Image (cartoon, rainbow, N blue to C red):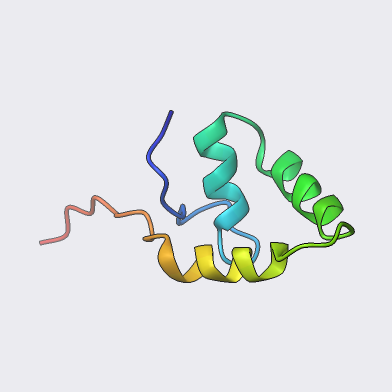
Length: 66
């Protein structure tokens, strides 16, 4: 499994679903669909998404700029 960090590419809003999808080895669109369907259920899904957006580090770039 990959480390949990928000990717620089493949983001739609904050990259949280893309990070979770990469972590669990599924497609980002599948994770986004799961998240949207879960929002129909009672619970703090939206607040959890915002918290992960703030707390998850962004993916580090490996630039070789001089």
